[in-house]
Image (cartoon, rainbow, N blue to C red; front, top):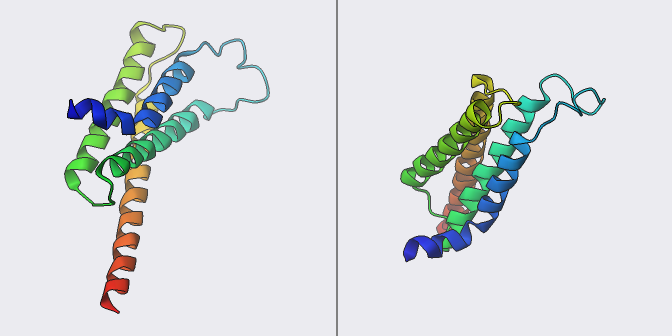
Length: 138
């Protein structure tokens, strides 16, 4: 039951995951000749999708625990969720949505986006910790 309560706080991350799955698996062959897309757009999209996903996962966790505590296990869980989702998208592109190409570089960009978000989370946590320490020291 506690797992379902935690999912309530992850609704934005779940919604973003569904949107990411849809956008990463739509057929873009008809629109690829338009001037909107450029070489490497797909990689940039993967990086951005997973940066936002990871931030939303951390946001949900912070809301669930009602504090901004820093735990290595939380970071590990968020990274593993991102690995599973990123790998799942590439498997879907490889086996189900064959009009899309599964690429290791897409997965690498997923993980770079995830790690950028982890870095942001850690940096903000350390900044918050240092501010709270300065206030408590006065």
